[in-house]
Amino acid sequence: MDTQEILHELEKMGTAQNRKIYARHGVVDEMFGVSYANLGALKKKIKIDHALALELWNSGIHDARVLATMVADPQQMKGKTLDAWVKELNDSATTDAFAKLASQTALARKKAAQWTQSKQEYVSRAGWTILALLATNDPTLPATFFQPYLEQIAETIHARQNWTKEAMNNALIAIGTRDENLEHEALDIAARVGKVEVDHGLTFCKTPDAAHYIARTIEKRGYAMQRVAK
Image (cartoon, rainbow, N blue to C red; front, side, top):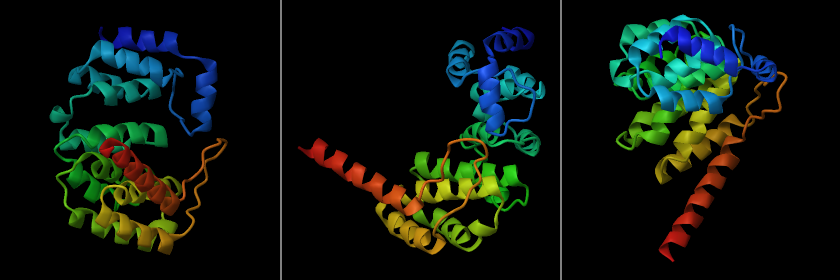
């Protein structure tokens, strides 16, 4: 399937209801309103096609851009492409899809370090989301990699922009549920931070309490390990 065929397919899959939902979640780009289930089905059909991903992103259409992040080859993503794409982010959903792709590239750590410091809301959200994904998915990273970020969260989270705050809170949770040592440090940071206020707009989304979520996740993990041991 070429780009035009896929765009036509996306248009047929879109619904007015999904467009309303995505708009409530802050999507402002042109969109068809394709469900993530249908995007996932297309991803399986296309598999990895990096050239196609670049064209889909360049369409500027929300659904096509999310699909682009699914079919792009992380090994072929160049720094200049990541930097170009991150500058075009303008909603949290596309940002998180982009960050998932960026977290799988060889430049993930470098871009997390750069973008978490950005004053641009969605650039910094991408950076903190990459960090959360690294905490979850990269077991090779030492605790010392994450500790400076914990201190940044403690010192700056309440002064950051709305969607950056949410990503920082998510990163705090991800780091805190990574291992036992980071758990204690993250819980200390969560106590210092307190309640994180995020405006979720016209949605029913809520910001999780980091301390509660970390403790609950660790408790569930311990219970699961006990069951396996039996």
